[in-house]
Image 1 (tube, rainbow, N blue to C red):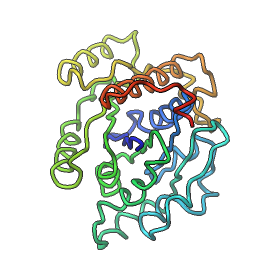
Image 2 (image 1 turned 45 degrees about the vertical axis):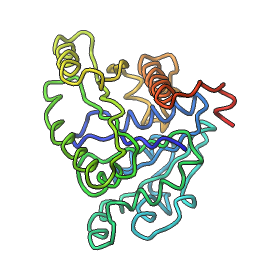
Image 3 (image 1 turned 135 degrees about the vertical axis):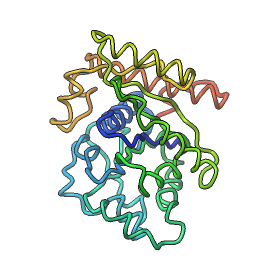
Image 4 (image 1 turned 60 degrees about the horizontal axis):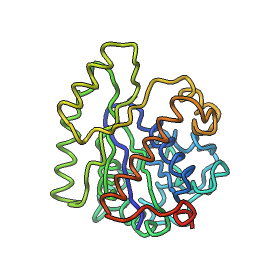
Length: 270
């Protein structure tokens, strides 16, 4: 069964969508069957892999509110053969209000995604910058969560609140939810502050912090304007190499946790 990983932080501008798009693309480039789920009403992950949100007929909103089969809204990207998308739409803004009186409202995304897990090696959920009902749904559906933290002054601000939310979800809604790792983003080797933040986060969270650190990179910033992941924009850029390293780190961690020998790439893609 595929691993469902939510990428979440209620702070905006920490690299959630950038990380979701480029991690999913990197896993697909490594020939792992990957589904990118856009759970943010801004639909930036949708446009980031080449789809215009204005042209989306059915999205994750219809799955959660109207009960449409998730299989029917999955879009195959033309970018990478192993990368699919479950798109978002601006209508998702109203989902929290519409779902408020639904039974098991925290589990609507889980009901949609869990049946898909056998079809994919990884399902990556791009969460919205809030701790509202949609993000709670994502964390309830996920097996683990990646927390992007930018290498800036307010890096740890609000992180405690997110970790507390994760504990609540673990105790009430999803006891198998784990922290996949804390991902340091927007790192600038020239700045003393960036290095101080890296040291502080590693001191506080130790083994939870990914070895891979995502640098500030012009190519990473440019690629969304072309509607492609950075690996297709400039495969040799620091940003592209960093996300490939992150994908490998996650794959190795999960193979080690499962106690399974690593399959040949051809077997993984089969």
